[in-house]
Image 1 (tube, rainbow, N blue to C red):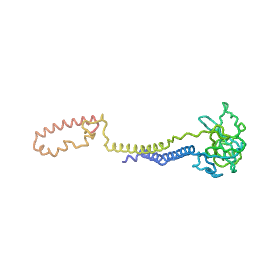
Image 2: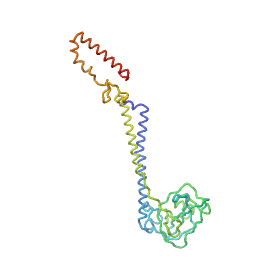
Image 3: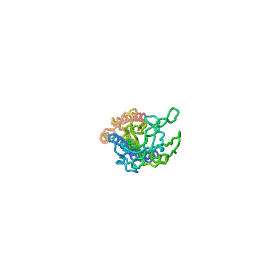
Image 4: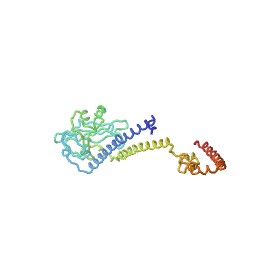
Length: 311
């Protein structure tokens, strides 16, 4: 196994070990984690559609961030819109087309201020925003899906066409833009609610290929190890003369299983002792015959050796 100490084999071994380690301890666990996350989102979507709306205060304590178990649940909220705090969330994609979502604060009857996603609007051919209808005045009760904050971005707030615009559906980001403190999370209105524009549709269930990707990485790591073992065994057999010749390189004297002819005891060698007495007793005639036969056999062996490159 000295060949394993060659620089090329050392480098190959290190690469295989590093790749297998990455497959089993980095890439596959990462995909399994993504699979769990996607399964959780799919379960939350299914639960949110299947369950009836409940008052938001029963699901999320006032002033606190909604938990993962509250995501996509249908909630009802009663309060009054504050249109002066309206903010647009730009660079959204709805049904494959660019859009902006309209976020409007709503003060509940309990005094809590929530952020309400009233739906989306599309820009015209010149990229300008269309007129956005104002929300209704007075106390309203709306139903929507409880959403989690997306998290802030590093893009600053801008003002275009008289509208404050941000780039994340995030309560903290919107608060920084309009100066109105709101509770974490937001409520995404469903269709036919007071103040709704074009309701943002629910995303389709994620097909979640991450689970199969994780198993692919595990298989790739196993294949790398198996390939290393295969080539190491091949190199070992070549180094020890155990690798059979190709069919076109076969010596006619080789055994049917590919074993080299000179790796086997020849009949001449095995019969030396048995014929020793006979050769001694036959005298000159026998010696002359043996010499003639040996000379012919040696000539034939030499021709084959010259032809196939072996002794």
